Length: 462
Image (tube, rainbow, N blue to C red; front, top):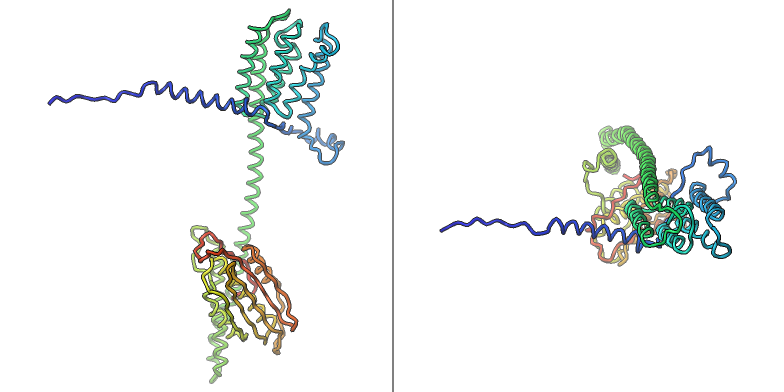
C-alpha cells in the first residue's frame, strides 16, 4: 500500500480578509464620529489658568460663573471677531450689501459652531470654503482665502480638543482630500493654490494640540491619583488608630473583667456555708464576665485580622434568645417572652440585629430600671419581624445607672441598615418601650449569604 502525504493548504486570502475587516472597522468608527455623531454636543475643556492671572478676573465675574470654563469660549469668540474684521477689510473685494455680508460671515460662523458641536462646525467650514471658492472670486491664496486658511486651522484645533484622536485624524484626511477636489474641479480665479500649505500647517497644529492634550490629561490623572492616595492614606491612618484603640481597650477592659471573673469564682469559698442565692449570683457574675471577655476578644480579632484571616465564629441568632433571657433573669430582671406568628429562620443580618436589639434593650432595663420587670415580644409576619421590649419603672433600692446613649444609637443604625423602623420612648407608667420592625423578603429562609452581618457598638452588651 502506498502512503500519500497530505498537506493542509492555507486558507486563501486570509491576510487580505483580515485587512478588509480592519479597514471596515476603521471606516465604521469614522462614520460614527464624523457622520452619525456630527450633531453631538461637546463642550470645550476648561482652560488651566494660574491664580495670579485668574484672581483679578474672577472678582469681576458674577457668582456661579467659572473662569476656566468661560475662558475657551471667550478666546474662540475673540478669534472669530478678529477674522470677521480682517475679512471685511481685505477680502470682500468689489462686493457690497448682502453679498459682501454673506462672504464675510462664512469665515467666522463655522468657528463659532465648533464651540458647541465641533464636528458640525468642521463640516460647515468645508461647506463655507466651497461656497467662497465657487461663488466669489478673490485674489491671493486659493481655494482657502487668507482668513479662511486661519479659520480652517482653528476649526481643526477646536475639534482636536473635544473629539477622539481617530476623529481628528479622519477630519484632517478628509480636509486634505476635499481641498484637492476644490483645486481640481473649481475655477482657480486669480489666486494661487494653497491646499498643500493648509494640510501641512493644520497637521503640525493638530499634532501639537494632541500632544498638549495628552500631557494635560496625564497631569490631571496624576493630580487625581495623588488626591486619591492622600484620602487612602488618611483612611489607613484612621484604621491604624482604631486598631490601636481596640488593642488598648482590650488590654484595659480584659484585665478588669478577668479580675471580676476570678473574684466572683473565689468569693463563695471565702464565706462559711454561703447561701445558695449568693453562690448562684457569683456564678452568674462569672459567666457574664467570661462571656464579655469572649466577645471582646472576637471583636478585637475582627479589627486586627485581615479579611482572609478574620475569625469565622458564628454570630448570635434568635435561637440563642432563651439563653440570653436566662442570663438576664439570673442578673435580677424578671423577663417574659411572647412569640406570635409562624416562627421561621430569617437572614443572618435580621437574626443578628434582632438579637442585639433585645440584648441592648434588656441591658438598658437592668441599668436604668433596677427592680423592674420586662417583656419581650416577637411577631413573625409575612413582611419581616416585629420586636417589642418593654420594662416597668425602677422599684428597687438600687439607684439607676446613667448611660452614654450609645446603645440607642447602635440600635437605630442596625435598623436603618436593614431599612426598618425603630421607636424608643417612655411609657405612661414611667417605664421604657422599644419597638422595632425589621423587614425581610417573603422567601427569606436564612440562606442569604450576601446580607451583611452588621457589627455596631452596643453599650453594655455582654
